[in-house]
Amino acid sequence: MTEHRAATRVLVLNSGSSSLKYQLLDMRDAGRLAVGLVERIGEQTSRLRHTCVATGGTRELNGPMADHDAALKAVAGELARDGLGLDSPELAAIGHRVVHGGMFFTEPTVVDDAVLTEIERLIPVAPLHNPANLTGLRTAMALRPDLPQVAVFDTAFHTTMPESAARYAIDTKIADRHRVRRYGFHGTSHAYVSRETARLLGKAPDEVNVIVLHLGNGASASAVRGGRCVDTSMGLTPLEGLVMGTRSGDLDPAVIFHLQRVGGMSTDEIDTLLNKRSGLFGLCGDNDMREIRRRIDEGDEAAQLAFDIYIHRLKKYIGAYYAVLGSVDAVAFTAGVGENAAPVREAALAGLEGLGLAVDPARNAVRGDGARIISPRDARVAVAVVPTDEELEIATQTFALVGKDD
Ligand code: ADP
Image 1: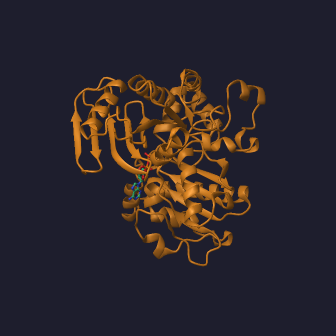
Image 2: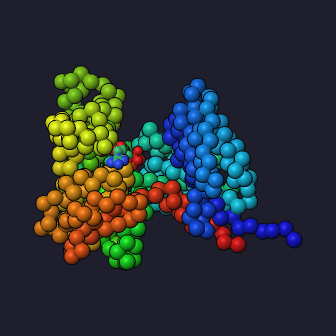
Image 3: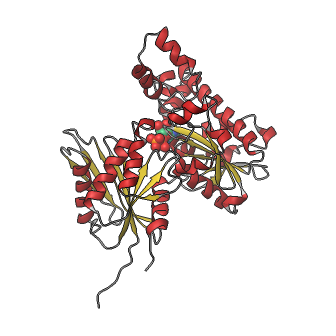
């Protein structure tokens, strides 16, 4: 009798324009089997860093990888060396992060030609991300055409936003013709963190209202009522909302006309300015919160002002989402800055005691990997640090769609 093994593994792929991040998970215990990253795809100096979790061994492969096809084949080769090859019957599916699903994709979706076409149709609203995600999808489909490939969309969690939050106040016909509306991003993280926050409070997701603050290099806030997103700070693109590492977040749209008419800048130049040379970086020349804190400790005024502007915007969104939700059970900080920068958490909630929001200094100072409460014991609203795990969420959603526990 041959041994019959259930297909319980999911490979998660996150394809950027010149990078490919991956994790192989076993959904029986949500454990990692392998993690890795290919960088500088298309250049002479491509590099693959692969870690097999069981052995703890990390290998590096250096040398040109012309495209995503070459990169994924190299990844498949490394996985095979660890006995985790993509031809294994234990692999149930490949889950792909896809940034923009528009209004069409409200849930994770098994990818076929029609789905590829629809993702392609969304390129005009996600020119930086969707082409790379499509390349990853096509490459993986060519390598394992028989295997379910699932697209998990960054926008999907936000499709529950009411029209009052999702629409811009512009001519409806023009907005509809060009699909101009607020989609929101980081949805996989907001979904995961809002659920984990409910779990931390010992409640079901539909019993709690949570403000999630995803503060990474990109940053976004969301208001989640009973497990459903009712507002989020990113809009048509990931440029709207909070001050980020290199993105401006909110500004008067007339700044753009002004820079064109008076500053003589082209549309592309302004696009680059607002996406790549603004935010913390534009304000003080650094986009890493660690470096900014170090400079503040040395008395650097530009770094202090950048920090203050970042916090001011964050505080405005906390207040706005408090009002949107009416009552709040928890505020959850997540991602690189949210999980690690205690001074950001403390400053963002300073002075909000009237709203029942406070940070306990000793609890806030504790460093740790797990989800934890940092508000005082008797606080009306829980303040939490909840590490995000987008790969696990993608794998979970993918497996829920295709996994058969046989
Ligand atoms: P993204 O996924 O958007 O690239 P991350 O969620 O990994 O970003 O967050 C990266 C950012 O987190 C860094 O740019 C840095 O500002 C911040 N960060 C990481 N570690 C720390 C730390 N120990 N203290 C303060 N900030 C940190």
